[in-house]
Length: 203
Ligand SMILES: [Zn+2]
Image 1 (cartoon, helix red, strand yellow):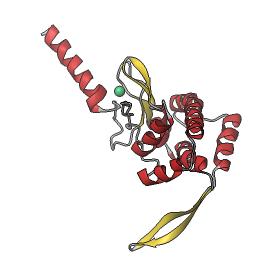
Image 2 (image 1 turned 180 degrees about the vertical axis):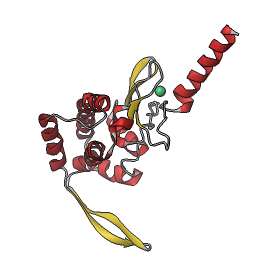
Image 3 (image 1 turned 45 degrees about the vertical axis):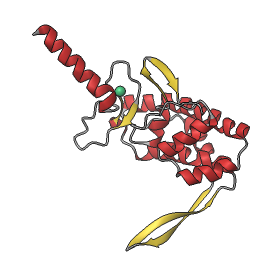
Image 4 (image 1 turned 120 degrees about the vertical axis):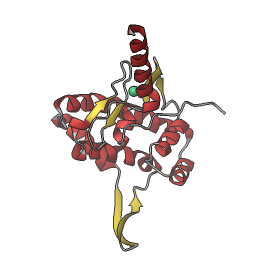
C-alpha cells in the first residue's frame, strides 16, 4: 500500500478545502489529489460523501474513469482559485459572466432530487434520486459546495492563513472573526515559537 499524506481539512467549507488539496506543509507543494483513490479518500475526509456512498459509487467506475474525475476535480480547483482570490480581496462574491455560465453548466450536469421527510419531531431532506451516473455522484457534492460558497459565504471572512509561507484557505466561522491560522498545530504554534524565540533573543 502506498503511504499517502493526509489532506488538510481546515477550510470550514468544502469548496475552500478543495483549494487546500494542494498545499506546502514543508515548503514544497504537495498534491493531495494524486490518484483516483486519493480523491475518494479526500471526499470522505472532507465530509463530501459517506464512506459507503463513495464505496458504492467507486465500484461502478473503472480506474481510468476515476482518474478522469480526479483530473477534472484538479482542473475545477484551479479554475476556482483565482475567483476565490478575487472575491476575497473584494470582500464579496465576484464572478464574471463567463465564470457564472461555467458554474451553471457544471450544476446542470448533475441532477440530484431531494424530498422532505418527517424526522424526529421535525423534517429533514433525503436524496431520492441522484443522477444516474457514478461520475455525477462523485462530482456533484463538490460543485454544489462551490455554488454554496458564492451564494452563502461572506467573502469578508474568507482568508488565507497568516503563516508566512502558508497558502491554506479558510472561512472564518469563529464568533469574533479573528481566526488567523489554518490550524493551531500547523501555523499557530510555529508563530508562537518564533515570537518566543525573538523575545528570548531580545531579552
Ligand atoms: Zn497555515
